[in-house]
View 1 (spheres, helix red, strand yellow):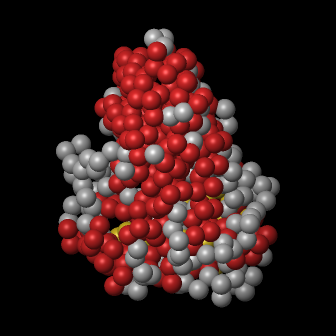
View 2 (tube, one colour):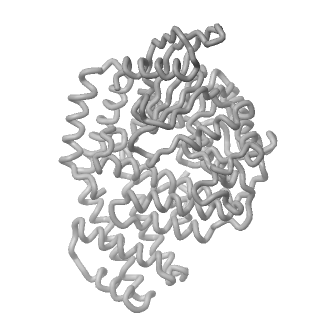
View 3 (spheres, chains in turn orange, cyan):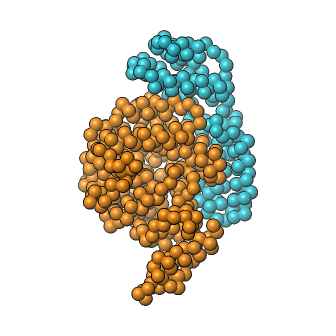
Length: 351
Length: 146
């Protein structure tokens, strides 16, 4: 659909949902951040049935047909975002449409939140995305605080059992870990292009390191620099909830601290040192930190990332997407395997 | 990856440039596709130049490991390792045979033996570090910003 067609379809949708009149959508802008969802923002103005006028900017996120996290299902992220709004910095979600009649695929609309997205990569001369150390410190504190709030969120009281997945709520953290391994093994098996000994070695190591006991909480699943909006030193919104589920809190911490997002530094997400970030998380009321479980989930992070990359490549190779960005992953598999080899103890730490 | 041949990639890059990039160069989505095309081309040229040699190095590392593993394993796996160590062929078929053999060793009960694990890890470590040396820095930042 063209931009004009999308806005026209959304105008009709809003009018039908709200009984709104004089719906006027304009200033369409396609957003290129992120690899999964098709995202666009627009100015919106309408008169509600009670006479009140809405005037603001909105964001629509449309489910892609194929890509990194296929098969897609917007429902879990919508449930999670709605539930934690007010507890964690997330955009307010206005509508979720599960059908494909309006925009050709399921979508949701949320209020636009101001801010830019710092990316977890350095410039050509090692420049950090956020140069001011005080700003990094402040962002790290917000980052840790939002994660602590998410992990302490009472998902049972909020009725989020559905986020346990098709097999229901995991019995405990160990069961969640076992399911996570099975889930990513599935992604790997569906997308691999031949024998993959490093992945086999990683899965063997994960089985050996499977955590014994751990708590169960609401996990974001992709919590890292690159997935939050900020204005100066404050986080204005945590984005990209596509992988949210019930799991071990160490899963988010390990993902956030993974070498994948550190560049050539020892700072997770290019914010602050690992120990500092973990301390901030604890200080903010996060759940108990366990280094053994962190090590398990650090390896799972590399497995997950590599499986995501090969899933994107598979979607491209099978003709289900023509997005050339998927092809970039072909050349990043080698670097990801080094991170995996380090995490699995196959090679010594290189940095 | 075997699922992607180079001619198909180059055709796809040309189609992207023609259909998505050039008609809308000033717009973010077109720019991010352009950066992606450049990234893929840079790495593809390196791969075409060095890829064959890289595969040979991985096969050679696997042969050394197989030679060692033949003496540590028993039965069919030992025989397969001995046979592979003695072979001299190269190319994609040898690479797939080498990788399959390693996976089978890793998934076997014998992998719990420290010497077996050490031999496999030495081979894997050498292969992944060598492969990473052939990869150019990514344009992921430009692509993500569009």
